[in-house]
Amino acid sequence: MIALKKLGHSALQVAPIGLGSMSLKGGATKQNVEILQQAIELGINYFDTADLYERGMNEDMIGQALASIRDKVILATKVGNQWRSDGSTWDWKASKPYIIKAVEASLARLNTDYIDLYQLHGGTIEDPIDEIIEAFELLVKEGKIRYYGLSSIRPNVIREYTEKSNIVSVMMQYNLLDRRPEVVFPLLEEKNISVISRGALTQGLLIDKPIKDYLQLTSGEVGRAKRNVEKLATSLGISKTHLLLAYVLSHSVVDVTAIGVRTLAQLNDLKEVIERPIVLSEKDREELERGIRKLVYKEHL
Image 1 (cartoon, helix red, strand yellow):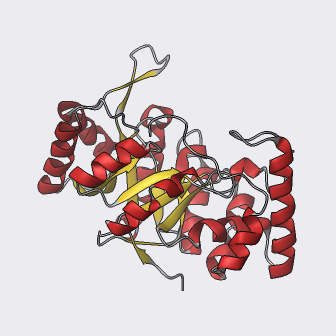
Image 2 (cartoon, rainbow, N blue to C red):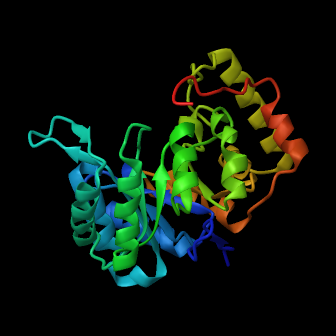
């Protein structure tokens, strides 16, 4: 039985491996529905989407596939971006009236009366932050959402919401090559706010993809990291995928990592991680990090 964890100071009980559904393209196809259903059988209960993904079709897919087990899953979606009428791109639209309006469309597509976790999909320090918080608090009061959080990598924005709001989580890219978020981890731990990591598998660069530059890291540094991963994975007798996810989840502030899968084979790769969770020691973490520069955010500090 998979051990669930409380998401921040909420009452939401989440499995440490979640499913990021953005990579499931094309709506409720037979394969996509099968992936979602098998994820449930594996013990995954956290499903993350956004109104932005495929102009709402991704939310539609989640709503159709999981309707019969709605009370057994945690549905997380995001708001703040509005598609232009011509479909060419989207604009940032973070305001109280827009959020209150947009939640109705997400509820309808998700085929539910409430959203477990409603996340602001981005955010800047110039936003009307107090007004945005008012919108989320109103939706909580009305029972349309249970909790709210951020999906942001900007420390200044994260600090502002941590100070002013009741966010329970922050979704951000966090992995062996990108440890920049650690700058806000102490603050989030202090406030009992969970990190939901994305990008934990580093686009496959440390597993089976050709080595190349990554963010500010050179291909040489990425190659060194890949050798570290291969060596420790062999030593521990686990897959590289398992090790990279264990690395992320071994940080106490990270309660769930949302993994994007496109095929049943990729989903099956997570079976070992779910059935045999491991916690890396501090020595293991140091072995993995050896020779890899710790990057810092250059903007939005």
